[in-house]
Length: 193
Image 1 (tube, rainbow, N blue to C red):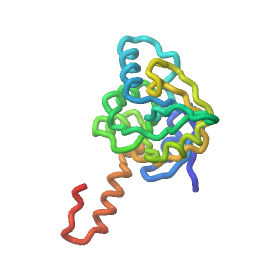
Image 2 (cartoon, rainbow, N blue to C red):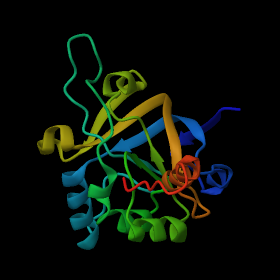
Image 3 (cartoon, rainbow, N blue to C red):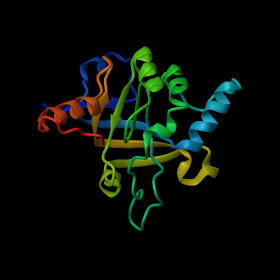
């Protein structure tokens, strides 16, 4: 059975039905932001400057879409490495962000914050930026236009593919698959990847 999520969420209740390893599709409106936007958001929030949009119920996708080629809405829109946003993530989860999406593992502080604030971490497919851009139906710059592709965007997406990496219960899909792989290795063989 295919699982679907639509953002932004009114409350976190739907997230309870998603588990590490679930393949899902995302529709609705999500935020797109990379390092520089995260830094600016944190600066504004620390100075108690109101944001021109709400973070409550939002998914932040770690992406800086490339410029649109002729006849296209947006260029490649593949994920960037998530751990680069780790210093900002706990603070943004505390502001109401309910999910983040990128590629790669999250650090221990982010995992703790995800459990505390009941937030998911999703991954999408690196190297598939052109394919993923086809799931974007509209793009709007919300803030920090001077940052170019690192500005804060609102993406309207339809059937955007992802996998749940960290669920609300402390499970980590990367760790699960690593344990399964290690069981398949011959006795005495180690996997030091």
